[in-house]
Image 1 (cartoon, rainbow, N blue to C red):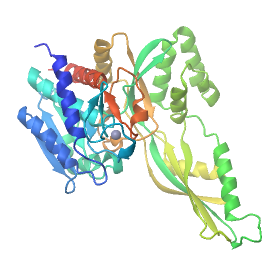
Image 2 (image 1 turned 45 degrees about the horizontal axis):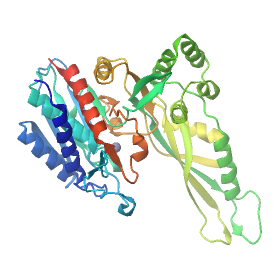
Image 3 (image 1 turned 30 degrees about the vertical axis):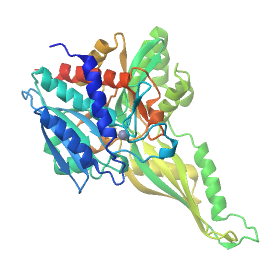
Image 4 (image 1 turned 30 degrees about the horizontal axis):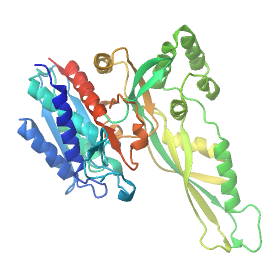
Length: 440
Ligand SMILES: [Zn+2]
């Protein structure tokens, strides 16, 4: 049967609108309402599903299309909770699911009820088309991603792993088109950095502020912060980033290949800057070729006329896959000097999936159908997703967008919206990947 994509456009748009009209701002979340919507649509289509609550109101929805057991399942992942809004800054009601000017508007339109709606549509189409599956296809719509995933991916992985365990997963991020040397690439997230949250504390003699002193806690912290900003951490090229660089190099022909070869032989900030990338890509590349430590919260002092005995700054540290949080904290300590103390508050390793896999190849083949001549660009993201909580699943971030509009800039922002055309494009692509890879 030939799929009527015009009809799918209306259908998937309707599902996204329905999800946007369910307020799942986290906290408190109330994701069970969104899970109930997904469950009712699945049930009507004859797809088995289950709402699983880690806590009251914090519902996850998991559905499964059974396959022949020729391989472990593929999971379409997503989260139904969203961040809060300041409605006075919105053109349309953030919970209205309005369609206007070619967009669906609402909180969650790109982060990430759009992908949840597309995932649902993929399952509906597989069922409707009667695609014979060689392996199971799972849909998982998690709660609580925006506030730590305690009741979502993490909870399910711990308590109901049987429901979501899979060989491969598709999740948020990735899918952005980028031009490299005149060729269109779609990014695929193949890894994400881990965390190493730190606190730098400086101590010194307190005193009355009417009498200036030297070497106060404040001065020590000031010096430490300057040293932290001047600190140039070593360049580290993890295999996933090396693969990205080689892809970029190959796009530039023999000269590009040679440039990347030189870069990989002697990686450094200067050689990375020589790559033919736009500003945004360059900043992302810098952030994913080193561990980072960025100061964000300052604490100290309690009266304007008292020199404090202790001041501190919290540091958002991020480490590449394979790097150790404690080790990074020690390097930061060495960089800021012994007059302050660096304490590791908490840490978690990064995660990475191999871009050399049959599933990755299936994504490439599906994209060649939907966007002929395009290719994939694997990359490591500097932030984090639910993937870190699903260590047994090879998770790729892939939500393709044809327009290339600044999706990342709309996440958590006012007037969050997605192009209806992009939603349909993503649905077609994701269906193509899953049907191709999972068909018996
Ligand atoms: Zn998200």
